[in-house]
Length: 320
Image (cartoon, rainbow, N blue to C red; front, top):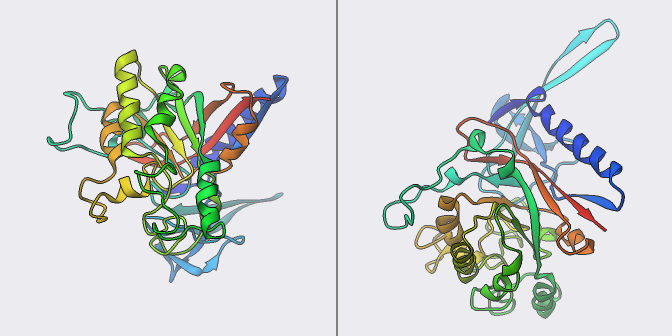
């Protein structure tokens, strides 16, 4: 998508409103759960192609399914007392810290579980879709214990095991353990401590992906969440996590590891229900400092017509 600075100024207003509210309410603190989106100059004047040798303001490349963001500086609009800076940029919808709208995954007949799947695009999401109480799950201790087997770094499955059969992903037991908190409109937010590996120019070679061996929601965890929704007659708002796609590496890649065969289990089952996903979140460990059950999540998403998702400023407001 191509957006001007003016088009995204609403995000600044959103942040200002949240921060102002926090100052007015004693005992609250705000956490920015968003990675900065690095930008690069256009290559050869082509706004759609980044010149990775020309990063802007120290930008770095990160693992992504598409190209890095391109930012083109436009001529200044001058006045007698100064000038307005202007620019335009191109970036993938699902780049950086971002939200998936339900329309991001469209089921075929074999995977459809409802007669009326949620197929909303970004402009159709309501304000209530984009905020709600946080149900916090912290698996970072288990993840770190597994990483310690390899000097604190991700390794092969034989060394650091983040498969769905391990205890180093979000398990069905993790979901069952918070079942009393699962109500209409909540966001399940999971800290794996994985955002520290969010770096590298290659999707496949990055430790963040680690050969599709990384923590996330196991298939059993998503299945358990759906069972709880049905039993309680509720519908959550969505899931947020510090990995590339909510699903564990194994669930994302599928049993054949080809990314297309029986893959993306939570996407397949969850988005058709109206869940939204916040992916590549940052700073989730800070939510552990909050009073249990006191955090609310706010997603500053653009109301972009026909979009399947988009980079967003994610804010949590908590009580200490």
